[in-house]
Length: 228
Image (cartoon, rainbow, N blue to C red; front, side, top):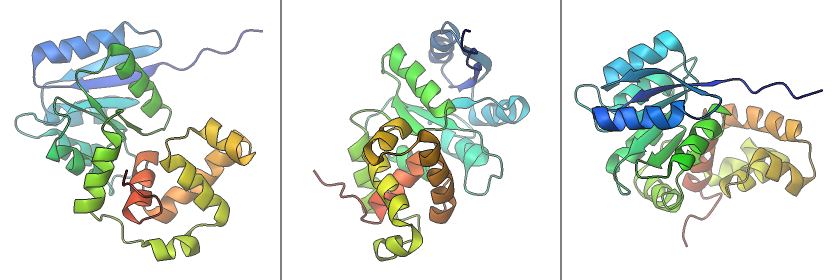
């Protein structure tokens, strides 16, 4: 018996540059199992399309006229959104102040626009599966900057052991090292389903809605050292 086909990942692409937008859409649309259901030229269109179509992922440019990508991201997956739509933020710049605002707005991941097509596809699939993603090379720089400039979560490192069970803390530590659910399960000799259940309980405790935000929490609160 063959395995059931994976569900199609539905994507909205938002970018104010027509050629860039078309290029991103083409890369994704030609990939099996991914469907581009809408394209937007600015943040307002992106929000309207996303709310109407409920895609699995929105690929969001940051710098757009009118409603920018940060504002649009906050409206789609910010802290006050009851039913968030995952956002992958795309940027031309490897050092971009807007990245930090987008993270706080609830983005599930970041990727540079000059990334390889396969990396874009992987990022979309990763975020659609409920995982956060930071482009290689951005991870430590973004986290270091967040730790230095931003403290969005009120929880402190001293309270971490009170807030989380020892097993939950173990999982957060491994998550912060970039491990997948499967890798965490192997490391801790657990079932993958058990790891997922722990993470489902951890995120509300931390006041976060994504794996990426949980990782940022760990760095912000000194659970993991961002130096080095």
